[in-house]
Image 1 (cartoon, rainbow, N blue to C red):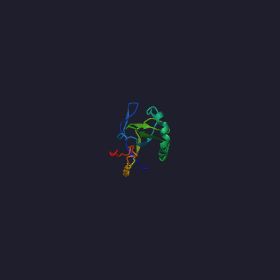
Image 2 (image 1 turned 90 degrees about the vertical axis):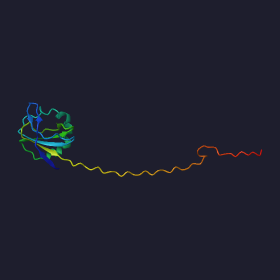
Image 3 (image 1 turned 60 degrees about the vertical axis):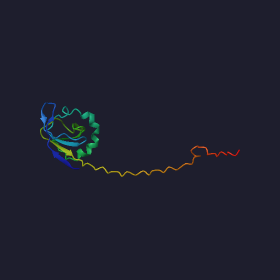
Image 4 (image 1 turned 120 degrees about the horizontal axis):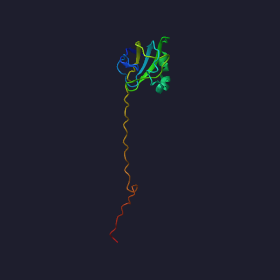
Length: 143
């Protein structure tokens, strides 16, 4: 899978400091961040518990990155341009040495389905008897 490496700008922390992060993510975009020299990120990303169950989906992606004892990995998914942490491995606290890997998904062209032309059913002309009309009676005037 291809990942593009981008710097991070203006990522707010609860301590009042900001970490640089790039432009906001698009909806549903997956990011794997590698964080170095981290002590305590848990207080910083409090939304982790709400989305922890989704982690298994991205576990394979996170495991593709080489593990380093000094680096903490976690996956992030964007829902409406806001990053949400899915999983944290190891210790926590934001540092200046943050690098984000943005997963780029090529937009799949939707195949235009050929609309099947519905064959117009020819209405069978029904005789009058089948349409509950009584047969025409000829009146004889000779009586």
